[in-house]
Amino acid sequence: MRVTGVNSIAEALKAGVVNKIYVGEHINPRVAKILAEAKKQKVPIVKVKNLKKIEADVSPVKYYDFDFVVEKALRENGFILFLDSVQDPQNLGAVLRTAEFFGCSGVVIPKRRAAQVTETVVEVSQGAAFHLKISRVENLANSIKKIKKYGFLVVGAEIGGKDLRSVKFTPPLALVVGGEDRGISQPVKKMCDFLVEIKGVGKTPSLNLSVAAGILLYEVRRHL
Image (cartoon, rainbow, N blue to C red; front, side, top):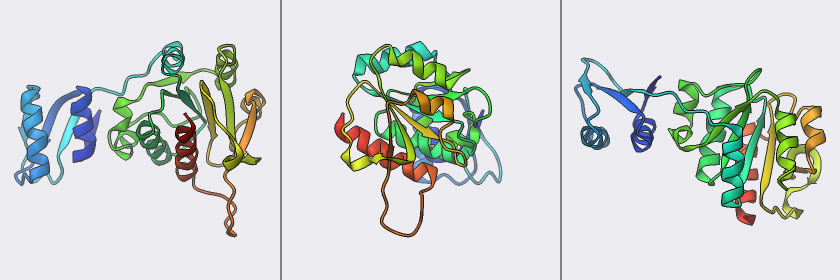
């Protein structure tokens, strides 16, 4: 996997997944800091003429077993974010960045009919994807059904749900956010204990997926 940009590569170095770095002739202070850390880790550095941005070959983002993510959330008394068929890599990357910022125990995505963690996703997440425990599952609804046996409160984000401001979240928690066009699928919705909605006051009926997820994650973290 090839990633570009100082922030993504800095986080990849923190995660210890950088295999090689490519750098141009112009080295600014931020790039110099990256190179210094790379040398400490004995990461090969290759100078490339006319290369405008620093690049790196990194190991692919690791996917974790679903049970591992569940056990981590239980151990931390934390929360898991379930993403129901998010299609846009830009949205997925932005959501992963926010999820890591708010200390999400893990993120679960479907194996099919959904965006996966690609180079674009990693770069949009500014490297946050390297620090998250991400799991891919065959069936989101079945996975949610499984965690309910462990006492997880399962809350879905959907227009028409309870006012987000009136809800108190308690761990262990599973937050479900739907895809860009169709929201949460019916089988997954049936698994939710209840739904919540971000109430607006303007004429715009809804928010961008990544913005809505940021508000939801902030509110969850505020309670936990």
